Image (tube, rainbow, N blue to C red; front, side, top):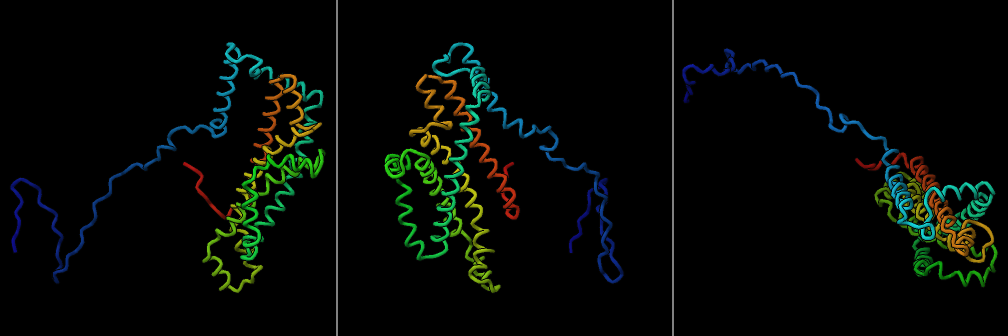
Length: 299
């Protein structure tokens, strides 16, 4: 066995002591140096409140709009300034015309959304839970959803007249298909191993539907509801321009006839805020009903 010799003047290496029986006794570990805890860089810098970040874009866009209007790049006959639009909105609220129009439009959207939700969800349950239902229902629905619902307006007028029925029918048709597709995809996207686990636990068919399939399809259903709400407001724009005598769309038609771009922009802003409010309600439902399903929220 070779023995290494340290060069003269160098410190002697630490050699573990041996017991009489030849076992090596462990030496005491060297004390660890004092290290400061590592603090993430993200926690060191000051975070900007999220509400402030989300409002930065709209505020900058509004400031640019006002600047272009004030310098004359955007003339009043092309697009009214934000100040003029705010004044017109106040006048419409003061005389009650905007409030009445919003009430009428909300009633139409609520009626069409209710009917579309019942029809779309019902067809998706039949098609998603039963193979026979899929064979009977899915093919006709897939054919009808490719037909633009706006192109059916003349038929709806012939069938239902020029009252409220064709307007609600247009909204119903626009709501039905996104809900059907997302609920159907949610049902068929449930993990088969969960179904097998439920069957091994003795769940009946209704128990599987109630405790496994429907909760698994709920995220897709809420996503479909968000899409449907967006399309409902889009369908309302077309519906209220067909022989309407009230509603936000009726105000837009009148403003178009008199070349009032300020009133048109006010109506568009109302549509946007109502749609944003509806989307906020659905997202709140998602956070409430899907607490059991943690997801990635961004970094």
